[in-house]
Length: 173
Image (cartoon, rainbow, N blue to C red; front, side, top):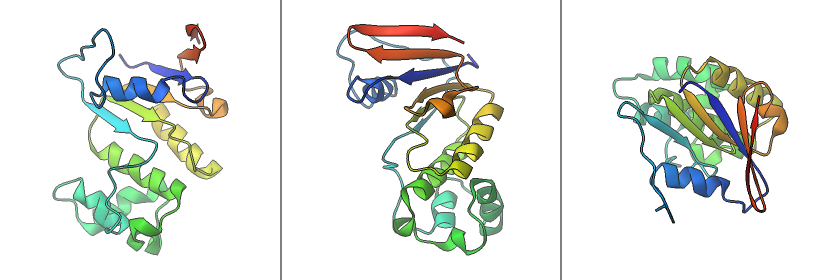
């Protein structure tokens, strides 16, 4: 509870599959897991599947938060580097990094206390990575991060699980 764990390893090792199994998107091949009664999961997928590409950035944010107006949405989006007319761009016109920032902004609205982030720095530029890292450092819940970005994981992860051929190795600190 309240810790940050990183999962690293080569492509195809099962890192994303583990997260999808934990959130119930995939059925476990063996064993089972049980979440605490008060756990609220926020899941960030690599592909940002849940975004409606017909909406503008601010419309997509507001779609996920009842009673949020455009002015409040614009203010909320600013720390995610959406300012000025950027908030009126259609989601379909966003770069991969911009879609990632929008997905993270929406995730922040959901009140999750367990965040599972699957390759959250894919397509992000350095400024966006720094915004994300600052936000995650301030998050007081539990984080599970799948990433190949060792620099990003530095100073975030308290435990690292390395998926490798023949098993999983745990590293503390």
